[in-house]
Length: 113
Image 1 (tube, rainbow, N blue to C red):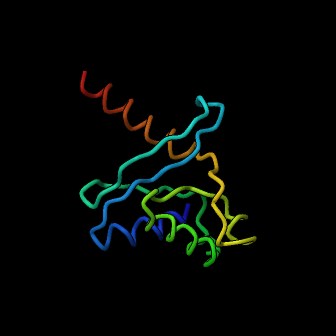
Image 2: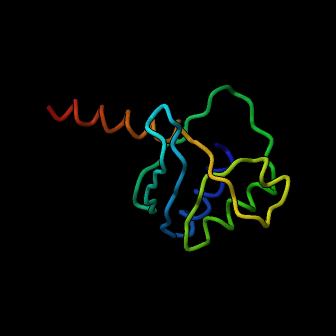
C-alpha cells in the first residue's frame, strides 16, 4: 500500500487526475473495479503496524509507468516488478481498497437516514 500511496500522492501533487484499477477477489464477486482519482477528492491511507515499509524502487517505477499510461494506475503484484519491469503487469486482487470504499459508502448512507 505504501508503494501505491507514493505513486498516487505524486500524481495528485502535480494536479493530475487518473484512473485507479484493481482486480476484485472472488470473495466480493470477482471481476475488476476502477475509481477516478482527482486532486479535489480527499483520500485516506490506513496502515497496520507502526514500522515503515521497505520500498521497492522497481515496483514504484512500474506503478508510475502504469499511472502515466492511458490505462491508468493498475494495482499489480510486487513480484512482477522484480522479475521484469517491462512486461504487461498482472492485475492483483485488492480487497482492502474495495472493502474500505464500501464501508465509507455504507456509513454515509446510514448517517443520511
